[in-house]
Amino acid sequence: MVIPNWYEKQNYIAHQYLKYGDCDILLFITNMYRNNPNFFSWLFDDPTLYGCTEFQLDEERYEEWNKFYSSFDPYK
Image (tube, rainbow, N blue to C red; front, top):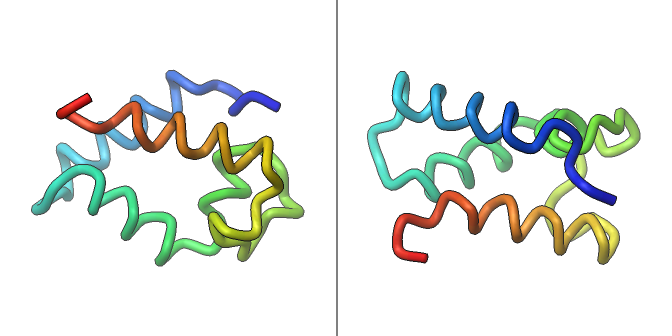
């Protein structure tokens, strides 16, 4: 399973960060997914993931999530 519209979602998060971010981008993303129960549902285009945490994702999605999250790491 690949994250649908990866680059569009990456762009959306980057724009949100430029607009509202007042911290490290990875912390900004962490706050987004911890405070928004719809985050993983939106990210994977799967309404059954509403309220899901990163630790509740299946192995395949968890790996994709880690790749997506790590793609924002400025030190990689």
